[in-house]
Length: 108
Image (tube, rainbow, N blue to C red; front, side):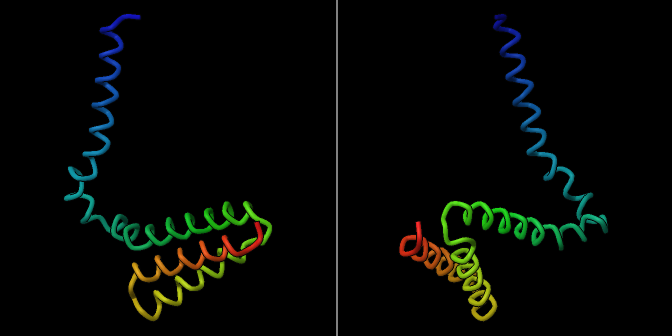
C-alpha cells in the first residue's frame, strides 16, 4: 500500500472532521438571526430528548419480564420532582436510583 496515499487520506479525513466541528461556531453569527433556526432551537431539544427517552424505555423494558412499568415509574418520579423542585440534578439522581432499585428488586 502506498504510504503517501494513506497519509493523504488520513489528513483529508482529519480536515473534514475539523471543518464539520468548526462550522457551527463559524456560522453561528449568521444562523442565530434566522427565524427558522430560532424556532428549531426552541422545539428541537425537547423533541430529541423525547425521542431518546422513548427509545430508551422501549429498549430497557424489553430486557426484563416486568414490561415498561419500572421505566414508567422512574420517569413519573423524575417528572414530578422536576415539576415541583425545578432541580434537574435531584430529579435525575432520584429517578436513576429508583430505577436501579426497582430493577434489582424486581423480576429479572
